[in-house]
Image (cartoon, rainbow, N blue to C red; front, side):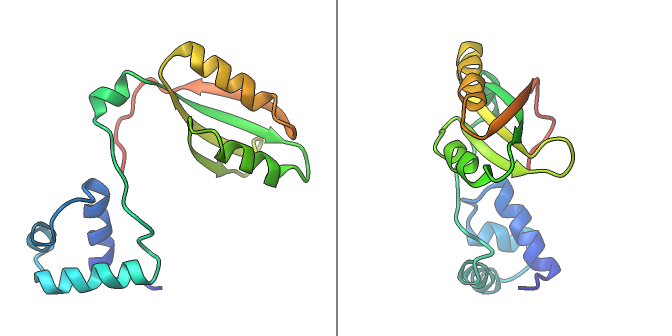
Length: 143
């Protein structure tokens, strides 16, 4: 599906606040409420909008330990490793990469000890060759 500039702007506003009212979005985009509602329905129907989620307050998130865990996977083991990582609630997202690493996982846990245990669990998965972790000190912005 090809998105218009108005569709992109609508998605951007929803990334800021997925609970914003149709009237608020319409005012910000300088469109009618009916137009915004029909665009939302079209984006949902076509699968561009797959769902809505919760963003946790920055002050709460700041107290948690976040890390980027780079993972190298043995050949032909990718599907099993991805599924095992999907089952770990602490892993918030997983991206495949080109270059020296096959995957990067974004993980969030309450304590350093929990992060140590999580990285050990990931490193022990069948199919994982090696991992390297970097703790996130701060998030400058997120969309």
